[in-house]
Image 1: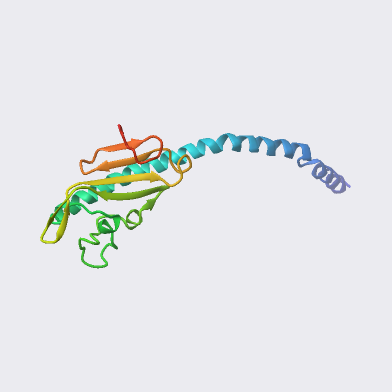
Image 2 (image 1 turned 30 degrees about the vertical axis):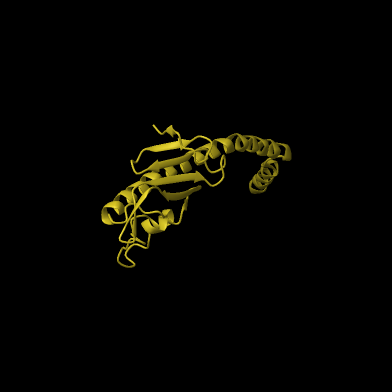
Length: 174
């Protein structure tokens, strides 16, 4: 008889355990409120991370341009990211694929930003163009979604930014 009584007590305890529908709805409402508060903060962190990555990528491109200029002085600066890129170790580096830049960055898109390189003034000697200046530009793929600011640099390595995400980089990055 004691075993039967214990089984009945356990059975009634199991019947009363668990959550009611109201309790579950309250918990879900609290979770939804927390998510709606967290998402804007996450988006801001994500944009900041993309912008930091873009600044570091501009520095990497500048470094590759400087190396390119010293390795191929008759060419000066590279006018495309493809010239700085190329698959590492696939073949001997050339002025058209110098293998100085990671493949993902040489493709022109990384971490929510588009990257371009523009050459400036040039000298032509023996049919070869030598570019004496270069501009590196990083713009967000979707302004306010992947980043707020655009970043630019030149052969000096100074990084400036455009707070509107355009290519008019006038403000000095500090």
